[in-house]
Amino acid sequence: MSDRDFTAAEVDALIPRLSALMGRAMERHQQASSFAHALKEERERIRLSGGGLVDRREWKARAERLDGLTIEVREAVKTITALGGTVKDLEQGLVDFPGRLPQVAGAAPVNLCWKHGEAAVRFWHGMDEGYGQRKPLP
Image (cartoon, rainbow, N blue to C red; front, side, top):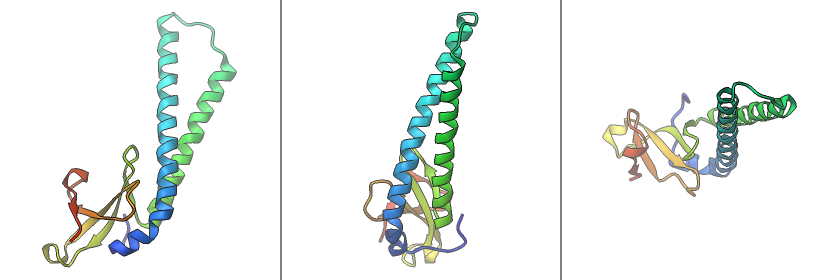
């Protein structure tokens, strides 16, 4: 979590970069999930058949691709974190930035909540709340 508070305008200035990073992370996450599911199904098929011939090169290539995708997702998340955001959900593309809204509860700390595809940060929620409790910015 960032040690600074962001304004909505500061988050908005990051959105072009966030969009690219989160778009790539979301795509790679989806690909990695598909690869992991396929590998799991293949393992189960082999187990149920009592073993069997496995193309080890193909298996290794798929496992390495999964590792590569996972590394790409981690790097994108790491970069978003370095910008000050906290990735909350890779499937929805949710990122929170700590901020304060003077109009809300005496400027208590809040999360400015951005979702991939939004052109600007337009929502916030309390520090102990999540996406379901998003409220429009004042």
